[in-house]
Structures are given as C-alpha cells and as structure tokens.
Image (spheres, rainbow, N blue to C red):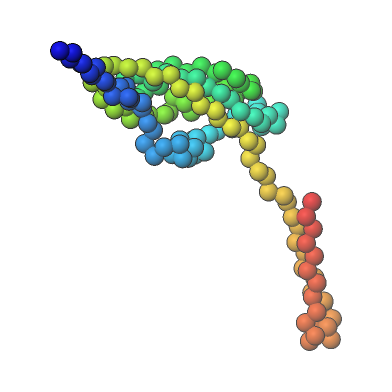
Length: 142
C-alpha cells in the first residue's frame, strides 16, 4: 500500500507586517501637520524629496532612522525628526519579536506665499458727481 502524506503548510503570511493606524493618508496628514520647514532651506529656497530608511521594533516604535537620499539645509534632520514621531500597530506574531525595516519619502515644498495687493477707492468730492454715485476702484497686484 502506498500512503501519501500531505505536508502541512504554514500560513502564507506567517509574519504579519505592522500598519499605521489610519493608513498612508494618516501618515501624510501627520507629516503635513508636524512639518517645520527649516530656516536654512527657506533662505536657500530648497525643495525636493528626502528618503529615510527606518527600523521598527516589536512594539511599533522607530528605533533607528537614517537618511538614504537627502537635500541638506536642515531638511534631512527634519525628516528624521518626523519619522521618529511615527507609532505603528504591530500584530502578534506568534510570540516572535520581529523588527521591520521600512522606507519613506518626505516631500519638502516651499510654502506658497500670498501675493501682495493694493486697493484704492476714489470717490469724487464734487456734489454734482455724488448724486450720480460715480466712484472708481483700482486694484494693483504685484
């Protein structure tokens, strides 16, 4: 007699990956809210992307962060500060303490400045023209 034994298979995702509460949209919202554009970068008008590699421990806390591709002018330090604010939810991995390596790209865009404008309003002091309610409004944008 031939007996065929089937191999027992483990789950496809034996180790479950950490997730940020709220997903990628929540990470973007946190970065948008907490980002402080560095003064040096504002003066030099630096824009671009900073790519940061970081390690999560078994509790979902960032233990180390390193700039892979940077901009300088204080943007790299600000990107590392933002990454250290992240806290992930890590599911139970059958009692195994697992560290995870992840990367994130943080975009630095100069804040939009409002264009100054000047408004003038001219109303005639001549009594005849006041009855006809003629006035002029001039707006100058530069």
